[in-house]
Length: 294
Image 1 (cartoon, rainbow, N blue to C red):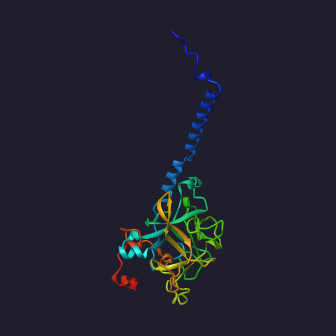
Image 2 (tube, rainbow, N blue to C red):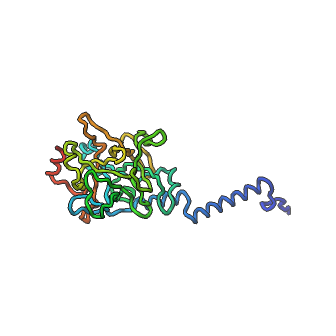
Image 3 (cartoon, rainbow, N blue to C red):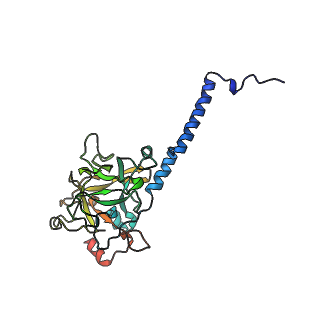
C-alpha cells in the first residue's frame, strides 16, 4: 500500500500562498456581508428605500404650502396630444447609476446625487419633494409667485437633500447636453433657491405675490442663474431604475419669446380619495379641458 507523500498541509511556495489568499477573500466576503457592504446588498437596500411609497399632501384650498409633499411633473405635450394618458408625464427623481451605488451607505444617501426625469410618476421617496421655506415663512403658509423656496427630499434614508443648480463650467455641467447641471446637495444655500413664475408672460407681473396653485402648469426658475428647470427627452440616461431623461436648468424660448413645454411644470398634490394617489388620477372636467386646450 503506497502512502501519499504530498498533501495540502505540506504545500510550499505559490501553492501555500494561494490557499491563504482564498481564505482571506472568504473572510473579507463574510465580513462585508455581516456589515451589509456587498454591492448586491447595497442595490437591494437602495431600491427598497427609494421606492418606499410616500403620502402626498392634500391641498384643501387649491394652493401649495410650505411643508407640503409634492411631485414635480413635466407634461409631454406632443405625446399628450396623441394619447391623453397619465403615463405621458415625467417626474423629477433621484438617480443612481450602478457604479455610483457604492457611494450610498445603508443609512442614508450621500451628496451630491444626480437627478433625472422618470416616467414612473407614482409617489415614491425618490421623486417626492417637500416645499421648504428659506425666508422664515411658517409651515402651512401658501407659497407665492416670485418667493424664494427650496425643494428637499424626505427625512431618513433620503437624507434631506436639496435640489440645487450652479452655473455651468468646463468642469461642471450636465452629462449629455453640457448645460447647467441640476443635482441634490446636502447643505442649503443660494444654489438651492428656486422661484415660481406664472406661465403666461403677459400676466407674470400681475401675479407676483399671489399664492401658487397646485396641479396647474407653471415655471420653476433657479434664483441665482435665472434659468428654468427643464426636461430634455432627447438625452436618454440609463440608470439603476431604467431608461430616464436628463434634467437641467435652461430656459427654452420659442419664436414668440415664450417658454416652451420643456420648462412647464406641475406641482402635484395628493388626492383626498382613497382610490388613487394623486390629483392627476382624477378625471378632468370638460370645462378645464377646454381651458387647457386654449
